[in-house]
Length: 151
Image 1 (spheres, rainbow, N blue to C red):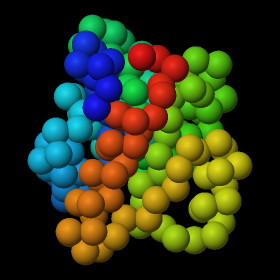
Image 2 (image 1 turned 120 degrees about the vertical axis):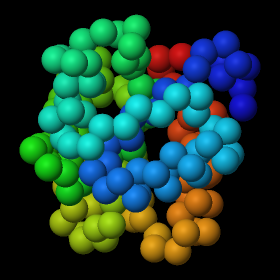
Image 3 (image 1 turned 135 degrees about the vertical axis):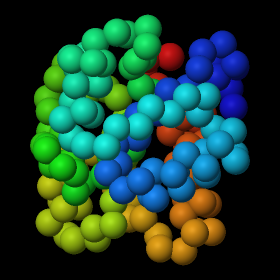
């Protein structure tokens, strides 16, 4: 990782309603020591509240801005595509990389995600070792190697 990673914790916002998938993401990142902090929310409304500093997420010290967002599409309360649309419509949050991490390989979901300016679209592999390798690669790329405008 670059020297910026040594001076500032890497913040990842994981938006995932499936607890088993969320735990696999967390374990994979911990094993490879990629982000220093993972914040997990389990529905689209909480994601929006976190990103836009509303409700319980208004304390910026407790809930810092993420360097990257991993976003599932099928979420309760507010759908992932709507979360993505709102993130990318805001003049500040639109710079935050958003990686769609979902089980859907539907052409419509992929096209809509890119229409809403997703930075990447990744289909979750069902095999644990492939999933773990994917998380390692995503973590290194988006949190260590990619140049982030907020660092």
